[in-house]
Image (cartoon, rainbow, N blue to C red; front, side):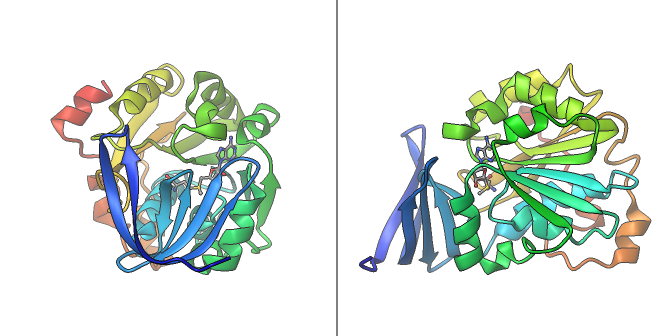
Length: 282
Ligand code: SAM
């Protein structure tokens, strides 16, 4: 493969706005059964994984997303032992989940083995815990996987791409009903829920679907500069535990985790929402 150097990559949203990054070198480019996969090295963000033209993670800012999707639910549940990650084949979420000693087993249900293979090869900073014996990798559509597993997970994390291709169903009612059933009676589900600035047509129906399913349903926020608009949201859904009331602050201090974004103040402040977002998800 000829190595392409120095070009600009733009991720567009709705064909009217975009995020542009200067690429130093193309590292991998290929097509799996499911999607176009690209790994590039960039001047500002370092190594970057792009699926179907959409940035999934960058070396420089992936920590905010992966720490926030994991530690908020895992420091809320009193004893998270069985965790399921849906999507997330790069391994960044699993890396953070593995920092929790209560977790006996984390399963990763990823549809595309090529994402896992290329992440292991070129993105070791996120894929570094995929070989951990506490991790089981299942190459399967996450929708099918949850359909056939009932009442067994303490925490389910939905680390999905935008709702395109095989991920469309990961934003639909039937899937969330199955996730609800796959959780134990006191289980927690957290998913990435797109940009509250740019993706309102995705955010609003998503929160409407989830409202009748979970008694506790909240949004929290984190910055991810390489994602469109830079402000990212996560949906926290829980059958029993509230992220503020049941926060295991002492365990967080006792574990002395090496985190770069997540801390005690962020755990609480991330749930503070500006008025336009409160209206969006009301
Ligand atoms: N952090 C990312 C973001 O917000 O853009 C998501 C990263 S992760 C790479 C997303 C993964 O979900 C991809 O590897 C993709 O193959 C996988 N995926 C898409 N649809 C899926 C499905 N139905 N079941 C399981 N995995 C799926």
